[in-house]
Length: 122
View 1 (tube, rainbow, N blue to C red):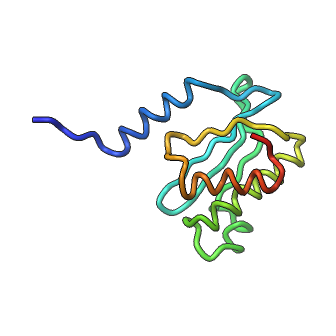
View 2: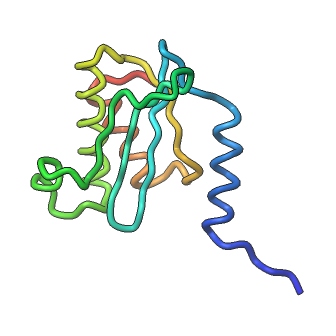
């Protein structure tokens, strides 16, 4: 009997495949995105130093207060703008986008669009 793999197993395998293609450097760090059923998380990571440079999520009180819902595309776009503003304050202008094994569609794409609108280049 053939067993069907769970969505979690499939996403984990995709994530490893995507991560093997690139990594964040001090000149061009990695913008990693994770989405759960309730919230969105974004962080900019320097993989050489294994250090998170900037982070934002819809769990933060000031971000959560400005949103109606924390798990829709509007929230994802706002999160992208916030992460880009924080990155630009630290002098980070270009990044590599890591979709984390998720399909580049909907909320994951909305984070990227919001970050691009706010001034990040990728």
